[in-house]
Image (cartoon, rainbow, N blue to C red):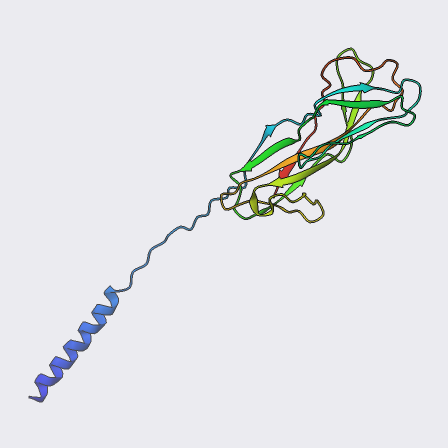
Length: 197
């Protein structure tokens, strides 16, 4: 009887060792991440200062100016002194509009507007306009209706990664004593808007 018990115990111990060895498996796997730093920036409306009557100071350097608020409120005209330079609004302008889509949700973006003046010119004309003091109002996102602040960026996307903004500026008549006054026509110039993380 003693011999039989010893055989049973030994056989059971051998079975346990075999079971543990079969439970050890290993497998190599991969970890991945998708980086998507790109987003879409589109202009949905161009900046226009509307239709105006304008005169340039062709003997001195006086200028008149017209503001185009980014919030869409009425612009203001500042006449030149002396009044040889002048602007009279015939039909009001509208600020530019831009839309950001496909960005990361609830993320703050940095907006860079022109820091120096741009020139608006027309073919055959000597008198030009300058545009400066670019500013923006946020549309949509978490700071809807706020003015954009470059020192502490506040252009923040919504849950879908979208946000929009409007851009205004100030138009000035020619301060370079042009040889001739403004011609009828469309005066055009380009500027750059940059958005990044």
